Image (cartoon, rainbow, N blue to C red; front, side):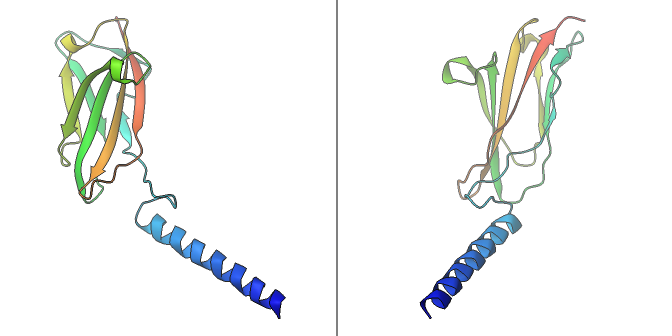
Amino acid sequence: MKRIAVVFAVLFLNLFLSVQSSQADARGLDPFGGFPGPQLVSPIADNIVLPAGSGVKFKWLCGRPRIDHYEFRLYKGYAMTADTLIMKNDVKPGDCEFELPAASFDVGQAYSWSLQIVLLNGDKSDKSYNTFKIIKK
């Protein structure tokens, strides 16, 4: 009898955890409470050539409901730390791209950027990030 009770307890716990996991998946969350960051569209190449008079256009896919804003950060170099942060910008939820002028970048320098979703309730997504280098033509 004790063995049957243990088997039912294990089955119930397994069922409970799988229901929690599927509910989290349906809401776009992972079972541990987070959710994936936005999908970056550009720049995602290793090297960027800036034609005269142009800039770097940062783009990502929109579409998640209940977004309060995106947190955009630009860093000089490969390390994404407070001392290499050169720009932090809150972007409205309907805006899925913006451009920085070429004068903001140095040829031969690597830059890293990250983007994170902030929901209306204050929850934040995982960060999406990429690094690129400005090169001469």
